[in-house]
Length: 245
Image (cartoon, rainbow, N blue to C red; front, side):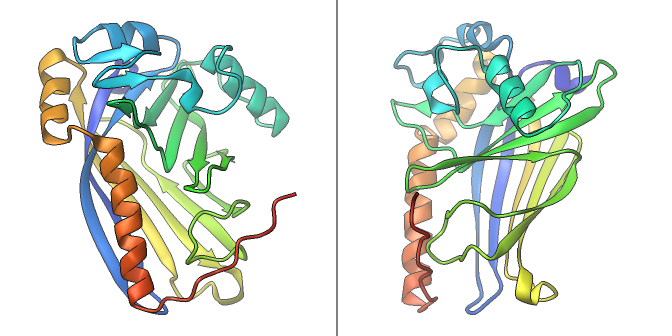
């Protein structure tokens, strides 16, 4: 089964806003595909990557939800129990950005939970905002709609649903999310699409990806603020953030 080995996924991220002012962009990117039970070994497999230490590319436990002193699988299992999700009995793979040259920002990380036959039983979408908040959304299947519960973009309100549509990971991987306005759900508002191709996790492969994108997460946060500026210039209305409790 092709998903059972650590890998890179390379491709594009496309965002489209349909109203009130149309706006669209596409960026090239790459993400890491990590077996959460073997992350230290995967980071040690190339000279370009490290674990819980400064490196060109590194995985830090503190960059993900929960207590970083606990294994990531335990954090995922505990969060699943808290949300009433029954996890399958197979491996869990994480699609995410690493920390590059000391900096990490992950708009969304996806945890694919497989059974022993290779079927996807559930997916956890770990969403982070530029305001320093994080929220987990559990998807019981590859297609799932759920209410938005965290303020992410200053140009999108809270009376929205997320409609996720994911492909089964393999030689390619697609992840599509449509933002639906509940009061006008038949008219598109916004969507985001990851379209990726699998590459082996090798010294040469990781090195090539880093040469093309030497500071991947800085590019991510820079693009977020640049596109926000363009939306502001288009006079897209700002939405007030809900008060934190």
